[in-house]
Image 1 (tube, rainbow, N blue to C red):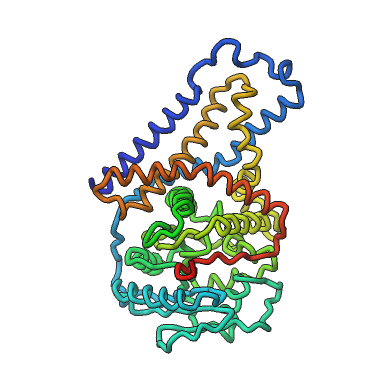
Image 2: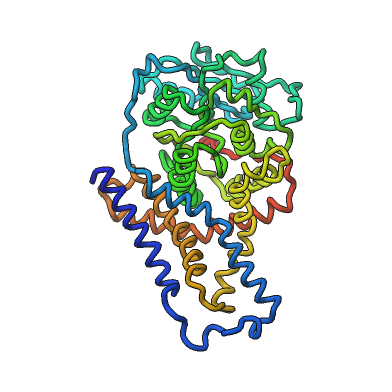
Length: 455
């Protein structure tokens, strides 16, 4: 099948799944007589009835995000396998691939720099360097295309930014920065691996020059899989990139729901203007805070074709700590007085939908025990949210594991079944992350170990 047929089939399956899910949830049928009270107040009492309805409404906080995911998955073809260069790589702008690391895993950084540089040459790139920004010296081998920047322990930003934000800001200082205002920076994590498609997408984006910031898709199932549970759980993030992220950048050119901290492409002049120097509140989820400030300044964003590869956390503890940090960082961003409500409204809805997961998850048990009178539009929206979120796992697996199940429907079925079985685990982890994140310290930056040689 070509990519157009695959996309049409995916759209048909998605619509059919949403309708069938609503039907099997009983949205279109009347409940059996006597199973639903005519007056919930008379049956449950006023306070408990109000609580039940509030829980239902809380479950719809995620609706804007779901609608954007639906539009992104249906409007844009996610099955094109090759990104075509629009101009000769020799004529492309200068690109700096910037890797920020604590320096705890020097061998991982060295190996990935070598692998990524090889990919750049295979793609025909000429105007590029790799810049490794580290707290501890890694002592990379001398190479005219590699620059190692060690952040001094004495360095302090004006606002007191910490962790990764501090290191990123150090690179932008006048006496450290070697890039021209019109050059481009591609931000990578220490385990991120480039692909030829991603490089072609980046060069097309930079050559186009219409937007100052861009981001693409990251998948987590390439290479050796260390932890199948966390990798299958991360399939949702892949679908989220292809849906919500793509939709917000392609249609609105704004980070309405924020963005990730890796596979970030920025123009030097714009990045220096926005800066990473935003105090502690901009240091936990520095990527999210940066995107909100950039949107406030009027900069525009676009989606970049081509995917990069990363690893999911190797342990359940790392998986939990990663989610906890994201929640805390977004919480600090949403509650920051530096960002106007108009810029962070949709991000806030997503945050509160996540923060109330421990409550909304209870509906799995409360709905059968305390049924409420039917309301077709409301019930359909609730079933739509559930159906789409389930489909996101399926779609993420199809995209992430495509190289592993080619010509084997049995293997594809096994991956899909595995993804669906990880959903309860994912819900438990997300709920635990909410509880730990909301009530724990919000001034810590947990480093996830992605060095497979240490496992």
